[in-house]
Length: 603
Image (cartoon, rainbow, N blue to C red; front, side, top):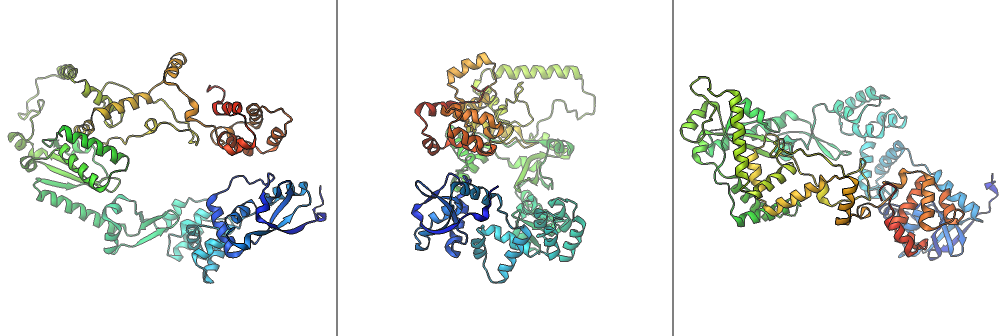
């Protein structure tokens, strides 16, 4: 073992231009944002800790202080940092030891100590910006640490002793009741309680500002009514502390909407406090449904609707476009006549996103007979108003239903475009739980079980379509879908059929040849998605094979000495970083080998 006490160490003033990052420096990956923060820290407070280096054939290589070196490179407009004090190693062996031990022995402050130091700095008059610069942290991090510093001392002491976690401590910041805070602390010490449970103990009745009721009512209206709020700084959300006030405002606002609807001519309007209305609820309420009239767009309007809808799906529609799209949607949905409104009503509710929704054209059982007599509601063939038993048996009714289905299929042959639209409609999931065609879609997985960088597909193969809302009016949903036009329909069919493609090896070869399948077009091996998931010997052999290296070549033996994670990072850099290839003098043939290489079984 080396006696480090006998090492001769010198400090030298080195021009920054003569410095570079040594190959011995173990830090290869840096966060650019953190380097900018460190540079501001050095500009404000100077270079508190010296670099350490070793003189080589190209100058002085920095073996300790790679982040500081990168930060100093951003400060060369300041004469103070154009010459740097460097602790010089007498030999390479010492430099290697410094490079390893400096990073291995580094230990960050315990969070409890950092929290109390942040609080002490604030009390001495330091601003959030000052603390952020001194610690090389973001201002958001400082604000959160200061919120923790404001907690009662027993909470921080419990954190220091390991009786609660840092995230547990953060959960306590939602409380402004010190007595309750300390009572809850005593209940959760050393129990491993979840953050969610701690928050519920501190504020059992509170709801988040993302709650649909809060979104619909609005925070300002809630506060104006005397409602109190708290803030969970760590979850970046506002807490509603008076849910009773919120419920009262929510109910009143819904009731006002219902009242306005009856003023517009609807016979009745009923607020529903659920987040959706299912067909089962409508059945339970014994409501019949009628539909709005005149819901067709002209060909020109249909084209405009399709274009605007495409922009809306890509979040590229401006306010004017939104207004036009809404107007076209109103035409497409049709409108109810005054006579229809006189016999029907509306259910009003707020969905899970806090958006006002309506189920319109509903006729109560007590109003059905009058609606039938005026022609607003068609009399059901099976409905008997005489109270006598229907002469049509159940078996006969099944046969009649099949005949009706056959007639519909027969007529549908006259409109192939409609059939294609229905196919796309079902494949897209827009039909919800309703089966439009007798097809059964089987998922063909094309996404790995774990999310990974380096694997990308055409967006059409991973795009998800929000399912139809349970209980939606399928007639209205389909009219809106059909209005997007035949070009959209064909794109949907192609997209979904491609997602369902699954073939055997022989047919796969034919298809691959026809469409020129290239796996590397979509997949680039990385440390996360491949190299880090195989063994070290595999990586060493692959490195040698790709670069034509003998077993004793220095480049191969250097890789062999690295940790497995470092080997994986080296392989990723070889596949994705042109500078790394230049550094290893990769030939044209080797580059082609790397760019086309695939793991066994994929080629």
